[in-house]
Length: 337
Ligand code: NAD
Ligand code: LMR
Image (cartoon, rainbow, N blue to C red; front, top):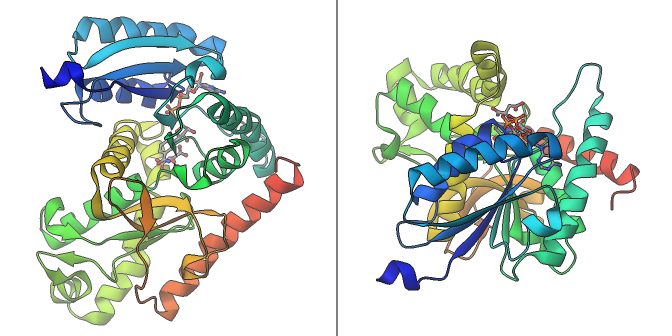
């Protein structure tokens, strides 16, 4: 059978014993991420306190009897968990604790993503691709990429697909269309409240979203007011809204976005959003891990270039990029790279 002859793909998930890990594992093992023809080997990395939870999840994986799942290995050693890794989802991170300053948070996460990046450089397969989910995702990806010697930095990405999907979700509500009728939404900048969810190139059922909004909301000024006062803050602060309403951060939607990020990177897509290492596109300083509109031909995300960016959009992108620069400088000051 074709399935059994396919090379197995080794997928490493860090923080696999946590909430997002729990939501990810079963969908990956079921084939939602890589498709029905690619068997997977799962490598779960946890800290010692999280190992039991990962072991419990592995028992349940066994009980699902997924035909595509070849084996599951659990470890608290990055060198073991990243051995032969083809795709890494870096989910485990240090959350902000009470009284913790931003610099403390960056330092704590540098202590996680530096060694994990180094282990990826030493142990992963030559073609490894990495997506960072754990916050602050963009800067954690920057740290991991800088620490992974021998792996091209452009193999490292950070998740802004959740923000992208949130933007699409808001538009479906306001325009009364389905999610698959909306295209070319873009998220720029950091996965934080400074991000810029941009609809200037977006279309709904083929019509420009800005025109559809103007028709629906009573003119161009009303549409612009809705974008500035409702849509952009709602999408950018949706993570906080979920925490407030649910009592804990987004899990199912985050896992779904991570799966779609990897799926579209591997299968190819003409347009989505992802945080990738800047090559200076749109004036974003080289080396920053910044969200852009991207496409993939199946060999990694590339920034979609040549889009018109007006003054209003430029100011929003610059504000979020300034935050990324500040995070990078804070990490540099710690001597991480
Ligand atoms: P969680 O606390 O339920 O799970 C995190 C897991 O990571 C825990 O089991 C913990 O033991 C483990 N962990 C901690 N340090 C580790 C290390 N050094 N190596 C391996 N494992 C480690 O949290 P969660 O709800 O699963 O969220 C995980 C991260 O994802 C958080 O940083 C959260 O802010 C982030 N997040 C990002 C997005 C996004 O769109 N980028 C969306 C939602 C959540
Ligand atoms: C989200 O966007 O839902 C998360 O990044 C929020 C968080 O702080 O974990």
